Image (cartoon, rainbow, N blue to C red):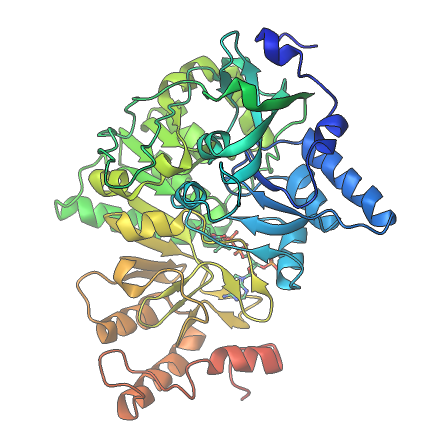
Length: 510
Ligand code: COA
């Protein structure tokens, strides 16, 4: 047994992952740790998947409701989805096999704002028991003598799952660095609405909570040891197109500083993950702004670079999402990063109250945006859901600046990211300040829908799509299905998507 389990009573609960998985009855609701491939349990889900396969061969189906913080990794989502053991999935996923099963109708998926996930569990929407969910299955770094646990590389919704479950299974992962102790700030929310006080985060780097998970030790039925690494996807250097998108955003910030609306420290930054977000961080690291701070969801390699260079003074998030090289650098400098990085439960990292207080600058990817500024972050025509809304809605609705970014086209120009009517709407025009592509920054602030359409088509749409978008706008103005505030023609609003489904190209045949 490793020296990571110091509580005497919990030492007696150590067992194999298979034995722990066998304790979980068919039909259980599981609240698991895990956020952007960090801090998710690995050994128990693998054992559950093996058990599901054995039971399937015997003609029985193991079906579980799987709640997490956000996306996990192959040991959890890929394994459980491959053997079809996930009946229901909540509140976010980003796994190829899970996506395929959801879109095939084999997994029920509820895509939810990440700041709301815990509240909805507290209200008892996911389980019938007294405590709402059956098991919390949580990865931790270490169990201390007093029966508290050092969190691992994400916080997610673990606080809620530990509190609102009947039984707890802890996975103690020796791959996680023990020096994570002190990096987390666990603020407990009063679950009763009407009795809640303000969240005492006034600056992005405030620390007001506990460094460890506190839970009822008598609920722990198993402790499992593991040593699996987090998912840690490799970092891809930004491509030319991503750098161009990033440059438009940096130029926009420059304009805001010149206009006196932002200082050269900018406001607290929120940055999604992926190539464009990384390119923005690379640009910020070499640009004119300094002593910035981040109040975000995820810490990626670009943020570590900015902390190293001193451009960023501190970063608050709920999880890491770093490359294998980023992980080595993180472990090497962990004593410095511990003073600069704060990991919080997702209901705090994404809380509207704090985001508004800090006036965050939100920068997230989009799938498609329409001419009036409504944004689809989740659904792809002909395919279905891609990942989920994640925290993009938490930040979009509440930030001072809400910027969505994407290449102007996909699939070699056959798809336009700017369409007449978004085929699914995650963020409405009321939430969006800017739509950015490699062609430019469409600034939607202070504009009516028709003025937004002009800005989006002229600045953000790909040049080959501009004439057909203008054609739609002009004919909608002449023959609107509902007035001239945001003119549309019901009969043609989805013509781009219909053409794509019929011919594989959104552009009309010449
Ligand atoms: N129509 C059809 N397909 C499209 C498309 C569109 N309008 N836009 C993109 N695609 C395809 C791409 O071609 C790519 O397909 P492939 O996997 O077959 O290559 C796929 O969708 C993903 O596109 P990509 O450009 O690689 O996206 P990305 O990695 O930049 O991610 C989102 C973009 C929107 C999927 C991603 O940002 C996301 O999941 N956002 C929602 C959650 C979020 O914002 N989280 C951060 C919150 S804090």
